Image 1 (cartoon, one colour):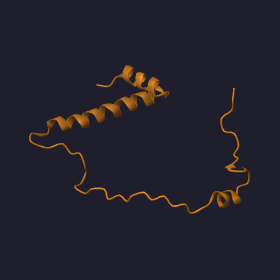
Image 2 (tube, helix red, strand yellow; image 1 turned 135 degrees about the vertical axis):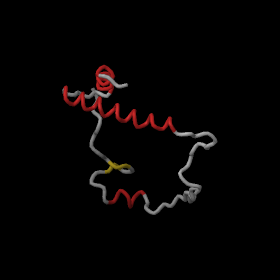
Image 3 (cartoon, helix red, strand yellow; image 1 turned 90 degrees about the vertical axis):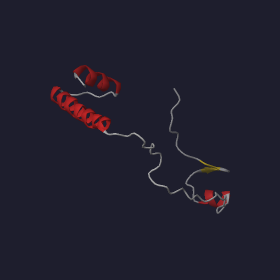
Image 4 (tube, one colour; image 1 turned 60 degrees about the vertical axis):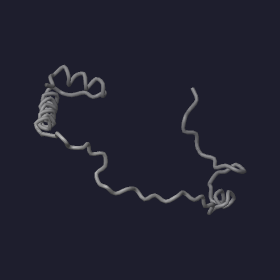
Length: 96
């Protein structure tokens, strides 16, 4: 059973803030979800193998083949900023 304290703890852990009305609504929703999932305990699963895959199909994967379609010079030819062998891009992470 989900109560106010559980919702408050979940809110703290997930860094969320709820108004009083929202907290009550979330409490009701979570309890309804738990009730729904608990219905699964009523099923007789004796002799039922666990479902690992949704179908019997297997993945058909191709092997990776390295294809060098562009030379380094061609790749850098349209770069707005470059430094001999590399693209130059604006700094994303600032040093402190």
